[in-house]
Image 1 (tube, rainbow over the protein chains, first blue to last red):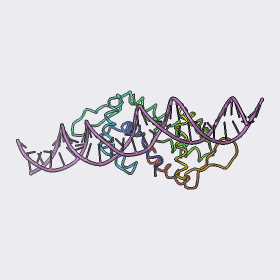
Image 2 (image 1 turned 180 degrees about the horizontal axis):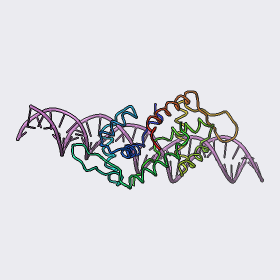
Image 3 (image 1 turned 120 degrees about the vertical axis):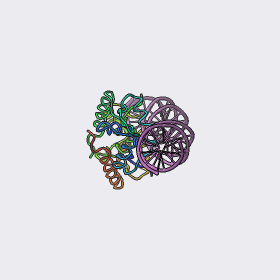
Image 4 (image 1 turned 180 degrees about the vertical axis):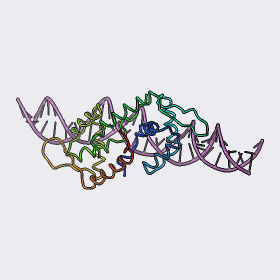
Length: 96
Length: 96
DNA sequence: TATATGTTATCGTATATCCGATATTAGCAA
DNA sequence: TTGCTAATATCGGATATACGATAACATATA
């Protein structure tokens, strides 16, 4: 049976939100999402989204060493997240 | 540019939520969603979802007169909404 | 240097969402 | 009954999501 509220469509929003709280790598994000969703998203899910967020200019690499690439929000990304939060709230303000 | 947080994927969840608050017709739902999203979903968006929710046994027609069909949650639908709310909260608890 | 390990990246595909356009139906009025 | 209106229903198609599988890459260790 088709599921209800299966979180489809909010991945980029969530990822923007997570990166906004703290700079994160793709793997950090997978781990954090596992905590929230119960299932760990596959690499093929996360990395293309990271790429898109970069291309949109919403996140950028944190200059660093190590094999992990950490990302942080750009100022444009902060603005986008702000807008997205607003839309989210309008939509779901009475959810409990 | 691809949008972030465009509400895709949460339509059935939202519709279940709205019908849970008050019995509603397809058109009522379109009007309410317009308030929340800013844009009014097309009939081709709403009615197939209503049909699916019926087929899942989550909503049922309210016996009534008039050309509008009002729907209400079934007990199974109430349970499903409860589960969905729980998942929603796990996912978005720290959203602001 | 060579190997192992873990992170990142890409590709093709299946699925679901949602829309616009169009048809159908039900009730109302003349 | 006939026409009008509004709600409902259906269809095809465009788009996006997310996955599994696989490859590439960088770092650390032997």
